[in-house]
Each structure stands twice: as C-alpha cells, then as structure tokens.
Image (tube, rainbow, N blue to C red; front, side, top):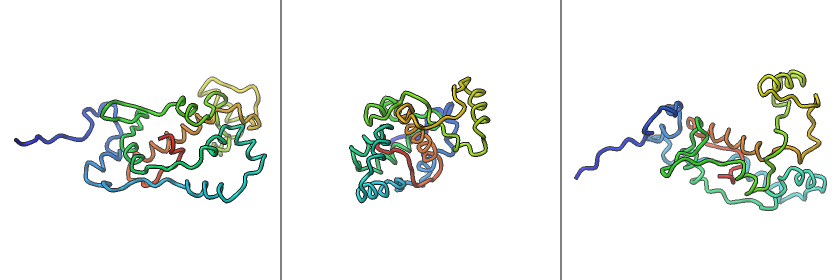
Length: 195
C-alpha cells in the first residue's frame, strides 16, 4: 500500500503571511536541514563573571533590577538543537510556537516565576534607543501613540526596581525569535534559557 504524499506546510496560509520567507520554507525545500543555531556572546559573559569578583555596588544594582537572581542560578547548558526546533516553529505573525499539539508561547508570568525578574512597573524605553529624537520629541511621540505622558519630562533610571525588566527581556527574546525564524540566519541572541 502506497502512502500518499503529505504537504508539510501549513494547512492554511490565511494568517501566516510571512511563510515564503519563514525558515520552515527553506527546510521543506531541502535547505538548512542540518543547521543549528549558535548562541551569541553567552560564553563571554560567564567567563568574565567567573574570572572577576563583582563589586558590591554592582551587586546592589543587579539586585535592584532582579538580574542578580540569574547570576545566582548560574550558567545553564543550552540545547541548541532544541532551540533550533523551537525557532523553526516560531511564527512572527502571532508570536507563538506552532506545535503539533497546538500553539504555545512564553509569557510574562514565565519570566517572573522562573527568573524573578519584575514584570510590573515602568516600561524600559530609553531615549538613546531613538537617537534622532530629543527628550521632548520622545515624550510627544509617546503621548501621541499611547496617550500616556509621564509626569516628569526626563525619565531617569535611578528607580531601578520600578521598571519592568522582565518585559524588556521577553521583548528582546521575541524580537530575536522573529528575526531568527525568517530567512537563513545562523545565530540568535536574547535570554535563551527562557526557551
């Protein structure tokens, strides 16, 4: 008995508008079959931390932001084959993993519970990320797009515990997952232990 050919692609492209450039298309066409991702700059940070003693003021700042918990956990062994498989199933249109059992995603609660990073508080939106904007232009754009205007004109990072560092970490990971799932990129950054 002959087994009928099954198309490995999505059953419907209605929502998956980026399928032509998605990593899975390259795999179905026979490309990228043996390629796994490389994690960028992970070893450098852990080698530095192992070789240097952190000063107390740096430890205090890391504790204020919640990142010291990650240092206490230490370096985790990453399974790059598993990360590659997850990236191949990541859909930038919906920010979810499309798995045979359904859709799943990483949520803010996961970041908070697993690593202790705060997810409530001020958004981490630094003006230097928008190099062409002055502080006033940045605040006007924020008001126009979100309807929110901070009481102070200058946003300072002196209140480190008051920021949503977990949201910033998750946002960067989502961005990196979207970039990695498109095309033939070979490396990925972001807080990969969340995967």
